[in-house]
Amino acid sequence: MRRRGFIVGSVATLALGACNRSAGRTLRAAEFHPEEYPTSQALLDMGRRMADYSNGRLTLKLYPGGQLGAERDTLELATFGGIDINRVALAPLNSIEPLTLVPSLPFLFDDQDHMRRAMDGAPGRKVLQSLVPHSLVGLCFYDSGERSFYNVRGPIRTPDDMRGLKMRVQNSDLYVDLVESLGANPTPMPLGEIYQALVQGVIDGAENNWPSYESTRHYEVARFFSLTRHVIAPEILVMSRAVWDDLSPDDRAIVQQSAIESVPLMRGLWDAQVRKSRAIVEKSGVAVNEIAEIGAFVERVRPVWDAFVTSPEQKALVAQIREMGGSGA
Ligand code: GTR
Image 1 (cartoon, rainbow, N blue to C red):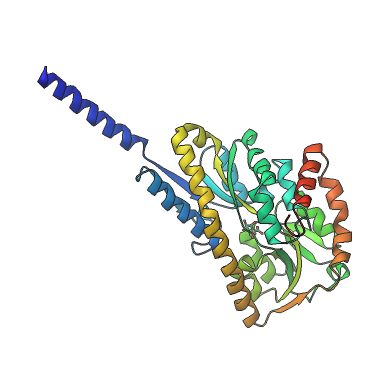
Image 2 (tube, protein in one colour):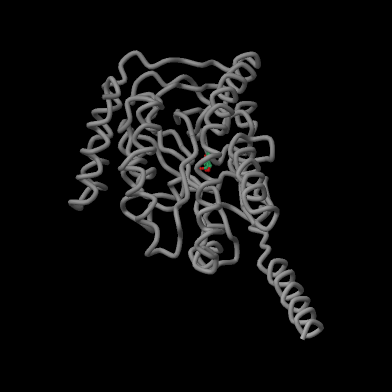
């Protein structure tokens, strides 16, 4: 009996070991930005936390620098479980889920703090949850700062200065309409193709935040950066729902908690990167200008809101976010 007990015990221990090993999992995360970019670093931080909380059972392998493709493609892969985790802008989700249009609206947020507050609260939770029917699980939001226009021709001070400019936009109808409403000609194109298109004169400019304008080296070609700050949308970390459903409840909790805990680090890195990128760009002699009368831009893009905020759910979300503006309540 003792011997049998020993054997049964050993087999059980072995089985448990095998089970633990086979339950070990490496989640593959796609990121378009280079490894040193704040979002990449935040993903690596998330991975360290996952490994820590699971005693090494759950790990994260980051594929930065667009190795796995443009955001639209990696997002599609994630919906089929071909990629486990993906950091993307909200723009490629705009045609998939109408609620993601709301935080992408021009001049919705007063400033970055307003955006962070709203995305940390009930509005953010609504947007994250809205992705579940689309085979994705929203884990958390990262920063994308303030997007402004840059171009090769001259400073933009009023919407009239944008007339006729060929402007690259992200692949989203909202951005197409936004640029059109300001009198420019929108050209949707993946981020990775902009540099060459600027050099070849296929486009006159684009729009982005300080870190992306700098890290993509677009500032070397498009030497006018006009601080319209027209969009302060967050970025989002999504997980393939197929993969999520396959995890145990405990592992889901670990992944979720690790993602949320990577956000404060991300924000610190982001703010530092904005300062650093701005300094590099300004030192290079780029002409940077503030906009004296931003009201003229706000006025022109108003129809974009009417065109894209159509459902009661979207309207409620807009109202909820606006209520959180101002002093911060
Ligand atoms: C960046 C953002 C990317 C992508 C890019 C773009 O700021 O981090 O996810 O959206 O802009 O303009 O394509």
